[in-house]
Length: 334
Image (cartoon, rainbow, N blue to C red; front, side):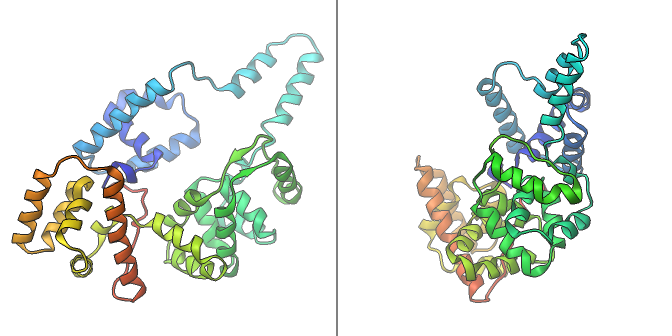
């Protein structure tokens, strides 16, 4: 497990657990019900927080305090309460009604409260681009469940379209409103928002079950093989090799020389290193340990490039049917 594989939600859960129950309780009073549900569910999956992860998360928090220094407010609540304080009627009521109709009713939050199967039943009638836009606005877990319940022939097309999304204009959102309002009464926000892209797709596929991610990528290859390959690269990282069984890992190591492996292990977690050492001869493991201790500073880009080359070897062996790779979900702490 490495800090780079943790999502923002993972880091928030780790931070709150490190701060203690009393501090976490106070922070919860400032969060929405949905935010509390998300972070507590993540907490429930954590049994142990390694010392290095704890230190890095706390350091990240301290850095964020400097980067985001200032006053944080809930702008919508502040604006609403300010309008409610206007005593002049009917002006105050009119302004408040306009504000509510312009913000609270213009969101896709309603769909987040619906059962995934029900949402899938409604969306399967819509154009795949509309489905992609809607899923892009949802939390990953909810979106993946909706995708799971969509017709099989629709999934790959929707995922492909999500990967192609960058920013959405008010006009596009307005068209989504027109398509969905009749059935589920959704009206979307007016501002441009970053909602799709490859990172969204990787998170989405990582949360799918029953190996559906592989089926979707296989179907996507027929439309855009380069994109399917890029998504695969992002889904599987060097640290994911730790989840492989001994036989599969040994098969990969036979294709890598010791110098290359030493460089790749420069930034690897202790867990990753020990898993590698356990699947090679004791003499080779000792040599690499000594080389790592003696290794001076190296460019991070060189290490990452070497790690990626080893990942490519693993992916090639998978294509040949010699082993099975898994990205391990990416959102769970073990």
